[in-house]
Image 1 (cartoon, rainbow over the protein chains, first blue to last red):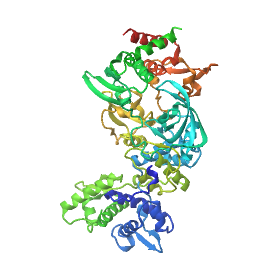
Image 2 (image 1 turned 90 degrees about the horizontal axis):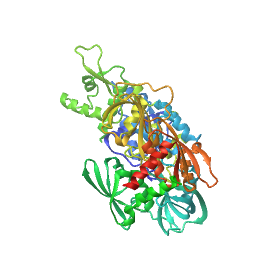
Image 3 (image 1 turned 60 degrees about the vertical axis):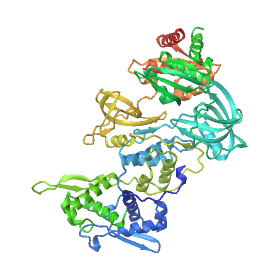
Image 4 (image 1 turned 60 degrees about the horizontal axis):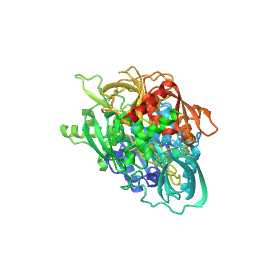
Length: 324
Length: 310
């Protein structure tokens, strides 16, 4: 993740001005910090920092006599600023900058291990006050649903490289199983949490939705098959060519299918209707899609003839329950 | 960028920040003559570029008529109250917590590093060893709306074929998308908008402000079965044991009205959108059953019967 990287050097035009306008108030407010400290704190190489501070000594107010210029004293590896009152405070936060912090902070508060009364909460309250908003009212971020104990167990298992036993409801296959998994990563993707790992039951790599994990127990056993570093670079949900396909014709009201699921092919049929080809990882998934779409979708071709009838079969099964 | 340009931009900023009254371009040229070309046209071009560069960083340069000059002439200044960031007084622990948060949760195309620099720099560590990661959240259109929320400016955009003027109250990221809730003046009601469905760029009406309602906005409901205009109906739904933990987590424990010995649960849901309710219940296939009211139960049965007959 990017946080592990050291902040990169910056060169673009406004960036150098922006950086200096942020650094100056901090130096002025601190009594002779070391150049190394400033360099580390603001992620700017020391040579560049000294270069910028030398320029600062040429900045001031009319009539630009020595007593109206900012005084920069660099001595013994430390730096002092005087007459920098005009830049006493940093430039206000732009909406982009404020949003990046507030959204990240709000989202992180819901992560396992976050202390509701800890420094993040108080930092957000202070920021909200400066921005003139109610800390909990302006932005909320839900990264995904999960039971807090489950998410915490999974991330512990990943961090400690231990196996985890999960009680999992497979939505696609409509079955509940207990599996042992070598966890490789826990990640939030488009509004849901996922666990990626090696499944001992399937003897293959699998991706599990965390909100479908009813219970998770961290085991003492270390993982047997660690994840390869390049895993996860590709789309974790891509379905292979061996998975059967169906072709559906969709009315305009069912166009959301294309936005929601990966499709192999889309063809416009006019008047907003579509013909799409979809991979079917498991029959219950298709059943669900077809009973929800009802008359808005028709199966026009299927690799497996049983799939063509999936919607009608599922509808009969559900109806049987209502007629009991 | 050359040291000369850095020096010039800083001096221009200092001049406009320090002045209590607007300064004309001519006066700026005169004061900063060491930094700009003597030729008036060359100065004007360079000055326009510098102004743009500073504004793109968020420096609030305002244009006002210089007082006491006839004929009227435009002048420039930076109002200090709009330039200076009020000091939130963050402790090192708080700064470190923000840095950690910003390293875990990122928004596409937005960087928290400039914000952290203004607040006191990078303190603490990144996200080492947390055991989880978060894909970058989409951010298209979100920042201007956030700015409009904090500054209480109405916004204008096109949504579902209509141009709307909206007082923006709140942004919600859920199910992988951003939603805006606010008061839609065009409809005269509070509304929820999916940002990925906006049909035009967002226009912030910066010359107008609105009053937020005194009661904090609870955030409009995001559950699809509540996204309707219909009369609210209480539905009771029986969900089988295998799916019970998920529905309880999804709806919250307060929704459970009965836990049966076989592990199944009966939950209540307030429904204003029958179509979305039906669609949600059908995702459980034959593992859920609408118990009442009869009209919602009949709707679902009729829907399925049509499918079987087709």
